[in-house]
Image (tube, rainbow, N blue to C red; front, side, top):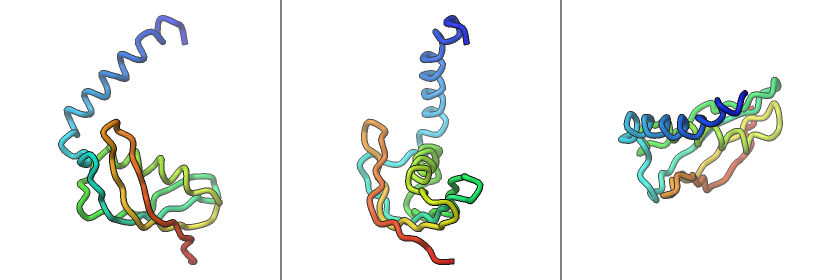
Length: 109
């Protein structure tokens, strides 16, 4: 891309973040609150990292959590063809960074 187009990228990203917060902010996880739950996920033989299901009963559905969930799965699903289960807590820090704390075990199918 040209430098002219790149000059607007930070402004557009900031505006997209403001719109997202205005639209979905009421669904965001509470800051510094621990949500207990589990995630079942896999790394397919085709190379995709896929969350199969997640269960955090006290956590409202949120695009913020969905982004953090996908990032977590992409980081932890390391071996193709395996299914994993995470049991633990999810917490959102004030700066927007997530924390997943718990155990990950391989699910035998």
